[in-house]
Length: 167
Ligand SMILES: Cc1cc2nc3c(=O)[nH]c(=O)nc-3n(C[C@H](O)[C@H](O)[C@H](O)COP(=O)(O)OP(=O)(O)OC[C@H]3O[C@@H](n4cnc5c(N)ncnc54)[C@H](O)[C@@H]3O)c2cc1C
Image (cartoon, rainbow, N blue to C red; front, top):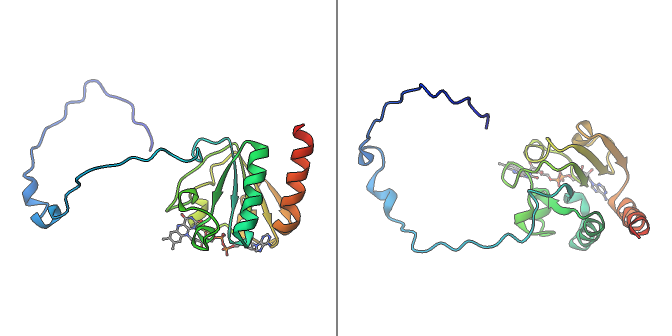
């Protein structure tokens, strides 16, 4: 949200509302007894590089390759909702309107078409690279670099290249 400039002379008015007038009793039928906060399993939100896979990844096994690339790049793995729904990867890695919002320095999208709900969670990334077999994929329109090819051919080559150059 946009930050407002503080006006030290501003005088507010305190209005005490009667909550019962606005919230019916039925709203209180569920009572929270305990809260358990789980430690985050990854740092998707804060990662400087995100490699994200979509439905075009085709399988859980191909996502394993994405994790391998992420290891080489010191990146985190994200996903589109279609990839999560297909069971390729856990829901907590979903990026977009109903997932997390990320703004990494580099975002590499593998097999992601770029629907508006996905773009909402990553379009402010620094450099966007799209790997897609369809040259007309909507995400290509906002990408800085487009690699036109299948994940099956491009991903192993990238892993091989970064493995060789990380040594
Ligand atoms: C209320 C609502 C909320 C939503 N929230 C989200 C959200 O938070 N996040 C989100 O991501 N989506 C969300 N969606 C879903 C969204 O509309 C899309 O359905 C989803 O983003 C599509 O995911 P995708 O790009 O992986 O799949 P697809 O649209 O199926 O695209 C697959 C892409 O992979 C490419 N491809 C196929 N095979 C290969 C290959 N072998 N190699 C390379 N490329 C290949 C295709 O050319 C295509 O571009 C939401 C939808 C609704 C209605």
